[in-house]
Length: 90
Image 1 (cartoon, one colour):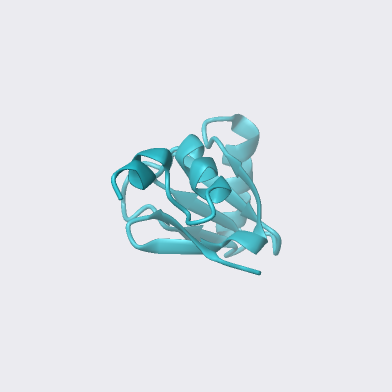
Image 2: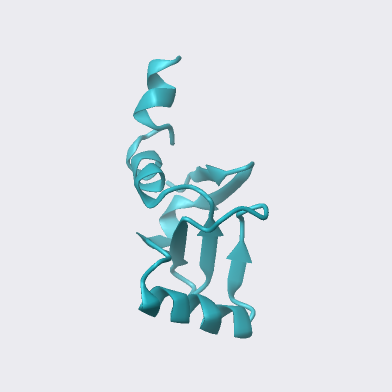
C-alpha cells in the first residue's frame, strides 16, 4: 500500500517509488543531479533552500529536498511519516 511522505515545505513523495535517499555533497551525486537537470528528470522541492538530500526514484527522477537525509529516513521508517520528536509531541 503506497503512502505519501512529507519531504518538507508541504511537498511529499510516494514511498513505494523511493529507491534511495543520499547526501548531495558527494561528487557522483552532484553529477547525477546535473545529468537529471539536463534531461528534465529533476524535481526541486527545496523551496529555494539549500539541498540537504537527494531522493532517487524508481522512474529515474531525482527529487531534491531541504531536509537532512537522516530526517527523511526516520520519516520513511515511521508508519505515520513522522520523526521521533514529532511523535513525542502528539
